[in-house]
Amino acid sequence: MMATTTPGGWRLLLLRGWLPVTLVALWWTLSAGSEALYFPPLQEILTTLVDEWILGPRWRSDLLPSLANFTIGFGTSVLLGTALGVLLGMSPVMRALFAPVLTFFRSLPSPALIPIVLGILGLGAGMNVSLIVLGAVWPILLNTIDGVRSVDTQLREMVRSYRLSRRQIITHVVLPSAGPQIFAGYRIGLQIAIILIVVSEMVGATHGLGYYVLESQQLFMITQTWVGTILLGIIGYLLTLIFLRIERRVLRWQIRMRQATGAS
Amino acid sequence: MGAEHLLDLQDLGKTYSTGAVRARILEGVEFTVDRGEFVCVVGPSGAGKTTLLKCIAGLTAPTTGRTLFEGEKVTEPPAKLAVIFQDYSRSLLPWLTVAKNIELPLQKARFPARERPGIIAEALANVGLEGKGGVYPWEMSGGMQQRAAIARGLAYQPDVLLMDEPFAAVDAQTRIDLEDLVLGMSRRLGMTVLFVTHDIDEAVYMADRVVVLSGTPAAVARDITVDLPGERDQVQTKNLPRYGELRAEVFGLIQAAKRPAMQRTETVPARRMVP
Ligand SMILES: Nc1ncnc2c1ncn2[C@@H]1O[C@H](COP(=O)(O)OP(=O)(O)O)[C@@H](O)[C@H]1O
Ligand SMILES: [Mg+2]
Image (cartoon, rainbow over all chains, first blue to last red; front, side, top):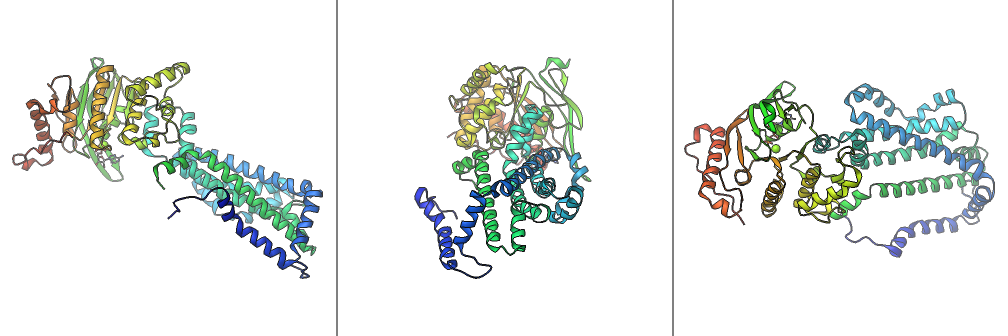
């Protein structure tokens, strides 16, 4: 059961904030003055983070490229997955033509593609972006197909009897109707994309956050490894927050409908 | 001449084939609807009323025969025909406001953009939903949603309105209100309506003619002209002796087809009460 009243304002901030703040405070105090190789003081980690990534040049040389790769890769996956999903979802013939290939590719763990993509495209942004697309496009595509196929039959008949144009059907009926499922696909795709920026840069790049994390570890610069890891965590968290905001905005009608009708 | 009638069903038959199973639903259905008529098709649940309506609307192809609409064979949904579906909650788009729902089917060629607000307002007024254009369907009661769906049909300015058990999902009082609303509206606008229902009272009360569908596969058992006064009233009309005779006749036809052996012992059930 859900709570009947949702806390708001300061109360919500307090409820949400106490655990992260407590954890950071604990970490800060417990690690203070630590000499252990793998557990440098949090203070040192944060100082390095600010010096290297905010005041220093790394935000430009490593952070921006990673974010650019992610944006291009995830953006391409979203556009490609949605467009192809609508096409395949609306056409049984197209589905029959492509379903076996689809099932094959989505069952392939995307990191397994690294050696081949690396061999073909070499080190660099092209390889990183391609890998993200190859990993993130499948859940988006499959969810879109499912969402489009599950458009209500009576709704389909309504649409046909009023002779809506193909364009109207896609923008006003199919996409909104499949919206919740499409966004569920985006959400999975987003997680995969975040994982793959890191993985692809660890093995197939000469800069970027993933490269930095692995490289610093191999050079025993453990503070830097912590810095990279924390940064990745923060970026993943922020990307998820931004995504949820957009999702809430696009699917606003559905949230309001649920609140109004009390439906799950 | 086919063009004399607005709708002309000729030897309409429909068989559904799912795998090896073939279900004959309709066979040799024939009747006509003229301009301005209010015709009710009545038959028990599962008789094939929705199937018949889909054939007429061009949503599914009949296995045999054909429907002529304004003299032309129906092969796809005609532009001057609108369908009001049984389940309003699955007919209006929940992500669009009522006004946007009504506007969506109004194509550029027939409905220039600047005329649309007027058309939408008029359609809403015709179903008693003045000023509700900005509301979302799920913010309204079931009865109001079905009215909004009817308004969408009206705004589309069809020559015939097909209605598939449109009041089956609303409560009894709302149902009576909607029956009178649709009757009044069709008289006022001179609309042609083909109204499908399993409710004998509803059929006799609303129709100029009742087409009784019965049997398996279903065919027209009788085409009855309802010789009741044009102005219908939920209490007065239903108290007329002729009303009782007509509903007994329809009931008898449906029962006879359902259980032929028992037709003599069946008694007509109590009328649906007017609250
Ligand atoms: N698409 C379909 N495929 C197979 N059988 C169907 C289909 N649609 C309806 N039927 C069957 O046809 C019969 C008549 O259905 P329907 O036209 O919905 O009846 P009614 O509207 O009078 O209740 C039912 O037995 C139903 O199961
Ligand atoms: Mg039906």
